Length: 482
Image (tube, rainbow, N blue to C red):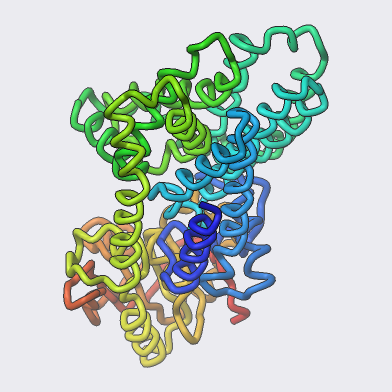
């Protein structure tokens, strides 16, 4: 089992070095070029992680993902140790780590430079810290709980569910700690990590809170989102691993022992919220990622629990969990790396990553040189990130819309805007009017398809711009020195 964990980890490292960046990764890479104490979408830890990785390994795919990959190794270890402590069995701990690494959620999220990669590891350490606290009775473990929660809050707002899970455990299984100062010290420590985010939001009209927490009430009732949520988690967890986790969750309160209650309480608040949210709006597949460390331990508990060995469905799950999950991973990795299925726009990996972007940015670079353009103008964060990262030789990329995404970046001045420019968009009907109001001369130059395996994924429309008028617009999230 340890060998299998090593193979899965190595596969992640190799794939991460080869696979082009997703549009979110390129966007967060731009954040790392202008560090701040928080950002529009998320708290700042992912930007700091990318900055550290690229300082060591350069502005490469592996450099961008290096810290996330290291965090995945730490998460695997933490799940192993948490499983061993909670289940009282080293073999069960290793089983938990194997199941954790076999899920498609962990395979995809832990190799990507996104907040989910980091919050996965932080959730694993929250679980391990409470497990150690529970086993040892040593209140000093509360400091580790507070630090892990604080790091999670520094990463993603869904970390509040981890805090809710610890609070729920405290009420149902650890009430005796309420008479000591330790849980309050842990809460204060976790809050201290979150203070910079609060200060940044207070200075920027609470823009992050309005965006993220506004999702709570958006949308109209539609059961399709609920079934989409269920189907997505079945695929991301692997059917038989998820089934074992459900068995473990259901049995976590039985037998009078409370050792597994922490794993269950870290799942219930998020599960309840996402189930309600999915009734009226889409739940993105990665949102529950932080529940996978406790779910892996719960699944391992089902496989190692004597009382459940007679259950035929669970026996079938025990036999099929590893081969089915491995099959899903092999097919996913093969499609991601080789693209043997020419799905085009329907290929989720190709659509989200910069597959086929090379010829596109090469054509854009050639046109920019021909037009003596001073910058590439964009209006959407997807081409902004990809062009900034992959354009060679590099040149300034100027997003003239979505100013809220780049509040930490310097503003453009009139000098660059009054020079010839090239505008790149994937949606001219939506974005061209916002750009056209600032320029008197606009001409469509090229339509460049982004392709993989002979199928078109999307198209980039390239325009030449001149005749800027009005007040300067846009920011420069990645300055090249020009």
